[in-house]
Image 1 (cartoon, rainbow, N blue to C red):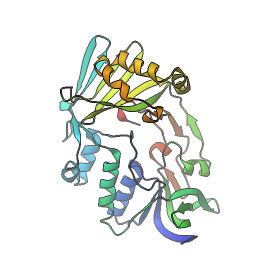
Image 2: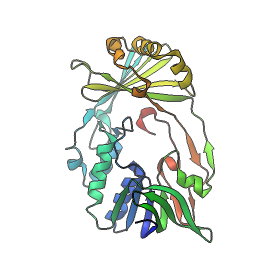
Image 3: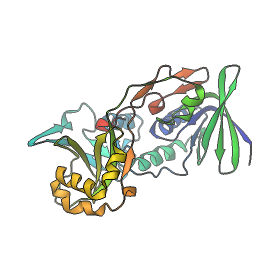
Image 4: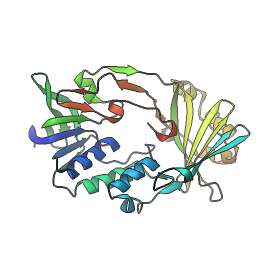
Length: 303
């Protein structure tokens, strides 16, 4: 229905981990929430797929851990660092948490799991394929959002609007909130390389000759993050794929015979790293959290 109008207690803009978790927690507490996600589903590759031990502890506290760990995942009990000829290992077995490891799971599985449990509460509503385009204000207070969905324009009026729409937040832009850019020296290229069955299970960081490659075990392939200088992507593309494959082979010789599978730049996804924060996270009727409030570095799977 075009120009449909809805009313909720909390309108959550953005269906990433911050938004869906917030929606679940509020619905669990008896609050009516409407989560709006612009994509039609959660399936996007090369997202944050690390569920840290502290997050697993939260899942335990919510009573969801046993069900959560039934989802397909890998467990990283240590993290290996290859620094030139030196090899170091971070051992997670001493963490003061129930789960002494990092769970590796596609983010879409994590989000689908939270959404499924959110739907068990009558106050939880998730609108997929619904892109928020503007805020609705009344006498200086944010009182809702305007969005576009499959059936046309909608208005969602709310006591509170939560901006959880990431580092390119439309909410913080429309709210006129000032962003302090802290700078970042790097960008990241994500890609896949086939993994042999006899290779190590644990994630690893390899640093050699000023280059850094991160390897994450995804079963039959390595999810790879190759760090490049900030803004260096166009120059890398100009050099051509053969030169880039040679870079990968130099830093990870064991996989040199597999880099030939990268035949198009479409297989290599650019993550433009931003590290910034809002000078003020809120306005009357509005609160930003997550990357919308403070975009963080991806180092260590944090941002």
